[in-house]
Image (cartoon, rainbow, N blue to C red; front, side):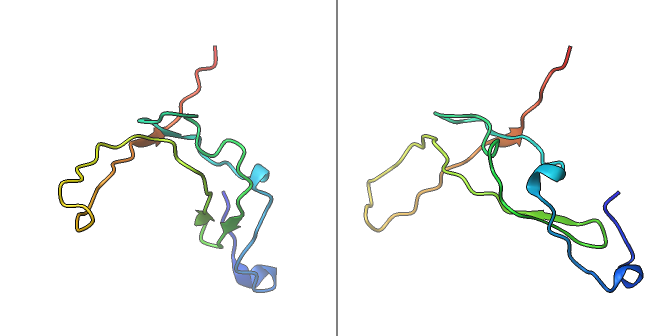
Length: 92
């Protein structure tokens, strides 16, 4: 529903609407030690392209815990898995 023919509209190839005016999914960090809804108050810009593609680059600080192996510190590499999913809302 966010598509248009750019040549019909003065060759406009990008729209930047208010982020509140575009659906943004509720994304949750599942293995969190803090707030689950990562971007609930985020006002990061949303970019809409003529083909309907939407770019959204929110930022946040993730409060999570990871198991660390410091045996070879400082010559080690650590991987911390973030389990991210869609926050579902049940409406009754």
